[in-house]
Length: 156
Image (cartoon, rainbow, N blue to C red):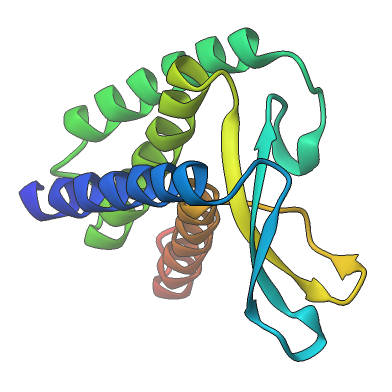
């Protein structure tokens, strides 16, 4: 169980480092083109006090509280069930913890989540996101893969 938590800590540190660098070197609302062809990938400094896709803006305290309670529950469940869950599940839950903790740190110490990964083609843009958001999405994919593997084995 030690290795997944080390991965969790490294990803959390990377998330916070990236956000620190974005805040230090890119003014809020500004963008730096990384892949210029069709304006495909930019580092764009934006903040979000809501949730995914900037829904429910201005509810930062409420979301910080919900995330904190959720993370405590996930961590307690993982520790309690560490002998029963698969390696893939351990990494998935550690990614959820890293992602949730990264955005919780932002909400508490920055007053909003810092987003900066900006993909799209010209004016057709996906909403900006960050490393922590990516962790949660990858974790969901890992849980799905693990469920499919279990279903295939007959462990319904």
